Amino acid sequence: MATDDIKNTAQDLLGKAKEKVGEVTNNDKLAAEGKKDQAAASVKKTGNAIGDTLKGDR
Image (tube, rainbow, N blue to C red; front, side, top):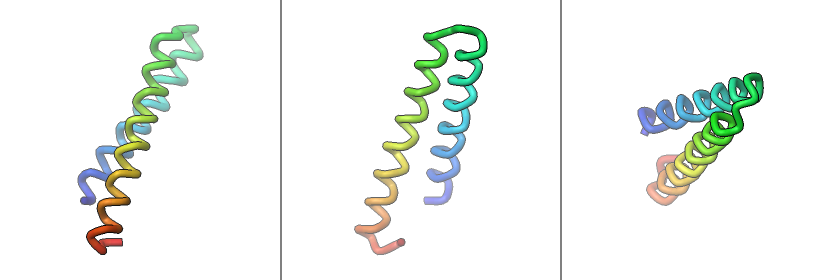
């Protein structure tokens, strides 16, 4: 599961970067895309944590 954690963290960081660049450049579409990426990563992290808990991995 560590690979999934790394991918989700990378997606979250990329989303944060997109959001900041969008804010600085007044690009609302890019900022919204960054927020969407962050939300998707959060959902994936939560799903993985629940799955790991059910499996007894955490």
